[in-house]
Image (cartoon, rainbow, N blue to C red; front, side, top):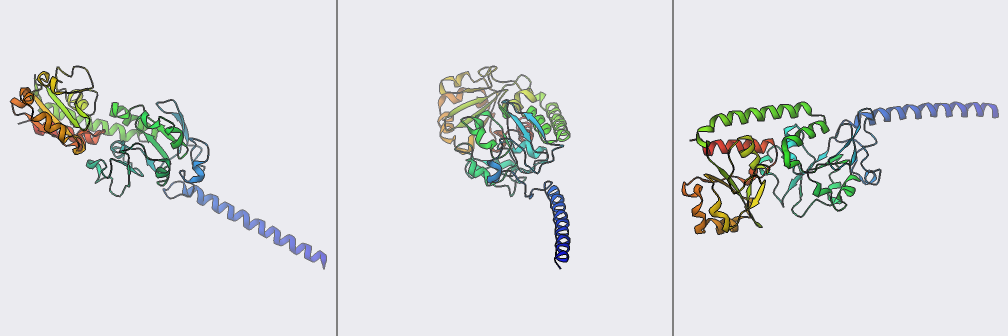
Length: 340
């Protein structure tokens, strides 16, 4: 009898072991499939992932395709194999150009990048008017890759905080050279073909615009004024819209600006502003007081563009943007306003 019980127990134990192995195999296969979708159970950004190794990819990532790269600040970043939930504030333009929708978007108060809102419909906003969001706020969106467009966001321990949530790649200043940063993003996210295609399309747009402009811009100078709460600035070759108008379209800058990428403009220097055309931007509607003060001054009338009635307000929605989508809209505006 005892011998019979021992045999029965052994059979049951063997059967249990087989069942356990079968369940384990099914779970492993299911987990491997889950890493390909946004809703996988092995997501970084959860409290457990945040307490793990800094800048390490998810445990569920495909080790054969995961790789380590250096960002522009020298950090070694272990990229997840196929990031699905990317947070890259103020790089939404470039992400969309590559066919990627971020998990959350930059906003100034309740306003995101207005010219992109149709494409970003349904993407939650994170208010960055007071600086980079707290790790807790960011954690709630469960990103699996964070991309910082400027080194300022990584300062004062910021990088260490964010890299605990998800692998974090930092640009020194992505807005300083939008085309270069687009190529870098393409390489980072496995979208090199998309980046190359977008740059070719943009170059073609520039070429077509330049063919229309020479008759109206030959020997003419354009100034791009930015009215903001803290003051008025003239945007030059290396600064956002200035890059598009002066570098890409080849329209001359003012003598006052020279080779500077950006200079402050006071009442005293207005008579030196030798612009034949003026484009001006009211930053987020917050530069109205400065704009009224300057444009109502008698000194404003000394500017050649004002005398010729060639002053145009342009939309801050995309003229303060950084990315090929914004740049394309700036080109459209420039051609529309200058070609008669």
